[in-house]
Amino acid sequence: LPFPQKANTVQDALKLDINQEMGDGFSPVRFIPFVIMHEFEGLLFSNCEKFAEGIFRPELAPQFKEIRDTFNTPEEINDSPITAPSKRVESLVQGYEKPLLGTLAVLNIGLEDICSECPNFCAWLKQLEAARKTIE
Image (cartoon, rainbow, N blue to C red; front, side, top):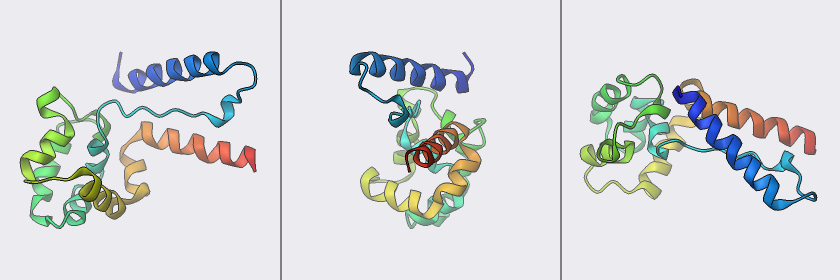
């Protein structure tokens, strides 16, 4: 399957399984799964300059961009367990701490840049926004 279909297939199967397990009283409108096919760090490659600035390592922007440019979208960054997005970041950032540096980076990047580069994430976010409107 092409990459976008893989994520949708997993998400649809998860939603179906949860709906079946929860029974008739469960409202599927309130359950909108999102599966990052690889890792959170992939989203950080949405804007390599802001990623590097966010972790206080602006000199790494070209290396992050080089990684990003080898894939169609940041969501697809992953060749193997040893080249997963976090492993790529760890190879450039000694002592990389996902909870701290990942948070700083994503706050610096922002949803707009992530949505412009990560179509699966953006589609999920739009579903959440639409669901919120139907619940209000």
